[in-house]
Image (tube, rainbow, N blue to C red; front, side):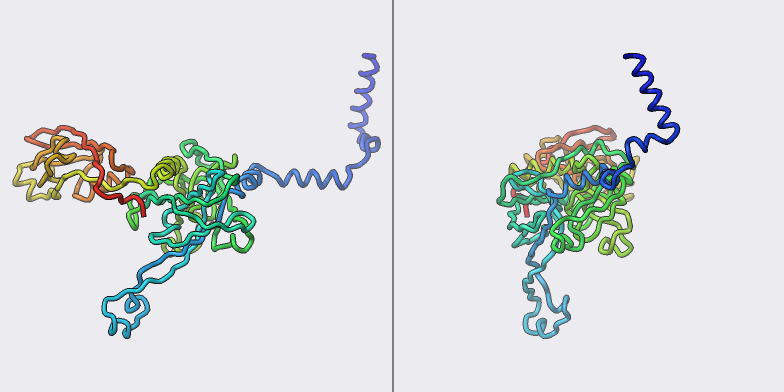
Length: 384
């Protein structure tokens, strides 16, 4: 038997070498070729898109905005009859969103929802539409949470944005130019992670964009709020804005940015529990920017900082041990040059009521550190 197997193997090798093996097994059929081609078309990218598509939605928002016709439409008659008056106008906009739970929670950008939305409609894969409730909005991080009344929905898998590799393939999914309404499905574009931890600081309308993910995957108007996913089909970011030649309003030039998903997780958790993020805080502290004249008068060895001019009794500043005349030089190890810098550091660190900041203070020719609690403001400012 052993001798027979050796002879059989030798015969097979002989047929392969001489090219006559195909005559015994026959040529590949058309079906075999088609199957091979079909399999070769599939990749990790196509699999990820197929996995994530059902969780990506289109969002249409109707917002009420105040309009002054004399300024906007150059209507002198309105100004003559109703000087200084404004009227309210419906403004419609669109964007993208992502289903993150089977019971209908959807995440998107705060700027997609707007400031005074009166109607939000979500379109699912296939064209089914649902009215959406705004659960909560956090303008600082530009994240909003919606809810639709539906069950057993497909939802996206959340990845880990701390584990992103620069150069890895990513896919931007969303509703550019409202194309979702044309095809009843999202659009996919691919690219790579160009950079991570890109910091822009505080931008328009008080939003802060820190540690952003940069990608060259094409992102256009309407893509905001959509998913940036990796080839495993995991969401790693929320597509948020792009750089263009005409200031964020034109088409993609290959430089887009997404909010990291790990930040989104923290915000969504709190919005789900409370419906708002308590950004409003009080310190009980009044300060004035230090200049060269004050520095010279006080005989200071430095010229940057803010000088404490007033402290409310029993406030967090009072409890921290601060006194009038103290000079705050750093907040959380960031040098302070003017009064606005304190709030900039707090906002860019995404701090909220209840968080603690560390101050470097100059008093009596000595430097010391103290901790100050951001006390809850008397009114909620995190929810629109």
